[in-house]
Image (cartoon, rainbow, N blue to C red; front, side, top):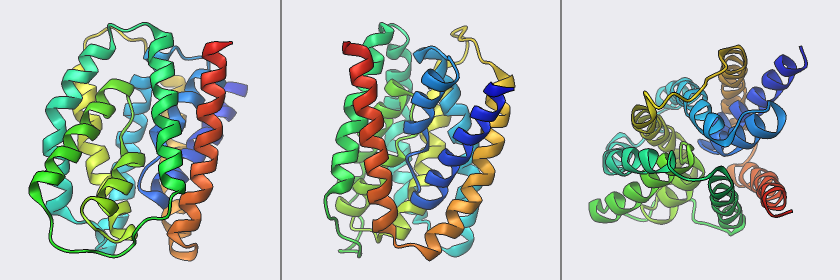
Length: 247
């Protein structure tokens, strides 16, 4: 029963992050599955991809109805990241668990610091295919290697590299997250990783409901405020994971 409650609470929080910010769900899902629900890093990264893929699709539909998805930009990002996501996903299965945990914590910490920096919120011009492709490939590699959707990196990339408004970047990142996560899951299929559906199913259900609430919350609270709040939480989680590995 305790595991079920923890799964529901963690899923709701992750859904709020995805719905409100367009990213960040999986970067919280992995440590939640490891430290709260007893998953191994390999199990957690695979399970998080399932959870975030389904939740992202739900959140994406809301943003699509509001017209805050730049489809051309998002598809370009995602297309560039599919192959790197699959290759990195296959390589990650060969690495020791402490290495994966350390890499995850470092990337999460860097993402948190980046989110705390002030960024642009308005479009600065047309999409640059070369820059979009390069950024998308990098995000795909991170998705496959660490088992995260990449939304926490996609949003600042879409804002800073391509000049999208913050709200549009949040919606577009969900498209990137969905496609990259599916590619990474494909690479991990058949690896024999144990999946505890008794935990994953309620976790996902709570995350989907939380995503709808997060979408409504994003209309009431400024995007920068939500981003800074999430960044502080992410920084604390990254520090905890590093300490746990090193001590």
